[in-house]
Amino acid sequence: MDIHVGQLTTELIVGFLALFILTKILGKTQISQITPFDFISSIFLGELVGNAMYDDETSIFVILYAILIWGSLVYLIEIISQKFKGTRKVLEGAPTIVIRKGLLDRDQLKKSKLDINQLQNLVRQKGYFSLREVEYAILETNGTLSILPKYQYGSPNRQDLNMQTGQQPELPVTLILDGEINTDNLSTAGISKKKLLNQIHEHGYKSVEEVLYAEFSEGKLLIMPMTDPKK
Image (cartoon, rainbow, N blue to C red; front, side):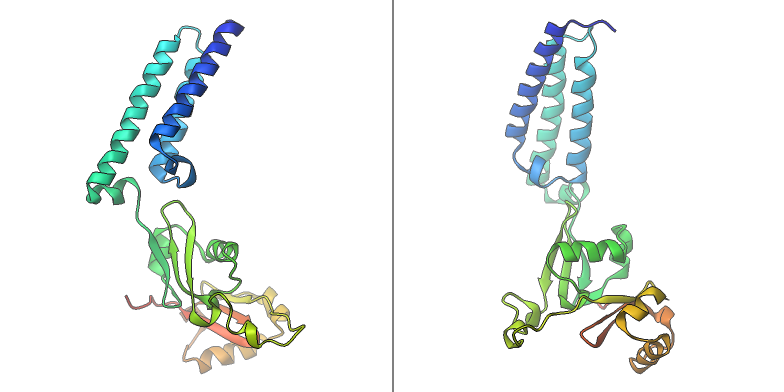
């Protein structure tokens, strides 16, 4: 495919300016809060403009027309979602509560295609290293996690105010995940399998299969059951 450098340069400049103006018109949400619809529209628009630029039979006016039509459709969808609340869940999705009253909501985790390891990663990114510290966790439509910590772990940390100088907190160790014991972490936590099973029985669970998640931190065992929390 033969295309002149001057024509390509002109199309690149025009395409860049057109996309820049379109981004300004659509607002900052296209960049800072990408929803599934925004993600699809961004990929499609980029492919549309990119392919058109390297096609020597496509004029600048065709590129501008394609950007105008696609931008108008995206803008129309944004207006519809603002005017009609019922369309927001379909077009933008809805926030999902994955931890409710300190308990994991297994159904919501499955619907969100989110496993516990991914959830732990998102929680750590928010500055909380244990699920014990979380009262509510909401998975937002853009994939980020919003956390409401438990009272004693709020900012400032009321427990830290009573800590002696030089006292260091310990990282929590995951011992049970999805009903299975993580044997590699038992030695890290300094706890035997027998002792772990005894503590599980003391908490009223007959077997490990009844436990969705368990972690050991600061000498205490946190257990979250396999059953769903009450709504």
